Amino acid sequence: MLSRKNIAVFVSGGGTNLQALIDAQARGEIKNGQITFVLASNDKAYALERAKKAGIESAVVSRKAYATGEAYDAAILAALENRNIDLIVLAGFLSILGPTVIEKYRNKIINIHPSLIPLFCGDGFYGKKVHTAVLASGMKVTGATAHFVNEITDGGAIILQKAVPIEPGDNEDILQYRVMRQAEWEILPKAVSLFCEDRIRIDGNRTEIVNNE
Image 1: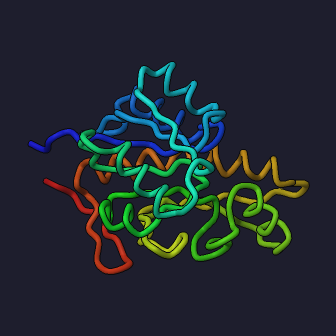
Image 2: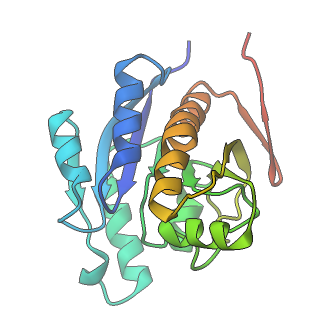
């Protein structure tokens, strides 16, 4: 019998992906896992309200309050201390995690990115900037990727991807919402559940989904 895993969700803004995780958990779709903590990078994040409504404990560790990345990393680790966190999920978290956090939670941090990695990813590609670049490229499909986090921005092993069509007349807002609704909100809870069920095998920068039967 697997022991239930404690999940911390890191947020910076509205928290739509956090809500998708909360809703999936309520439907019983996150097997063997429970969101026990939400960490926000700023105190104005509406995601904190979502956590409060769901009865999930939260804290703010503001990036602006720390002069260096090292100090910010130390503050994040201090916030996680004694919480027995098994998995960190970056759900629209706009601050960069440094090597001390990544090393402590190696292969235990999952991010959702609004493109089909390795396209339109890496430094500077976040939020609507991704969708602006996708539309400018003339591509006919885009999508989202759930992946592990390593020291390279958007460079960790891919867990799940889902493609989403680009329609005539799309702008950044329309495309962003379609990618969230059709891809991000679907594959992020799935990836989290697979992790909590110990069904992800990592081999270098590749993953394999296995059955535990």
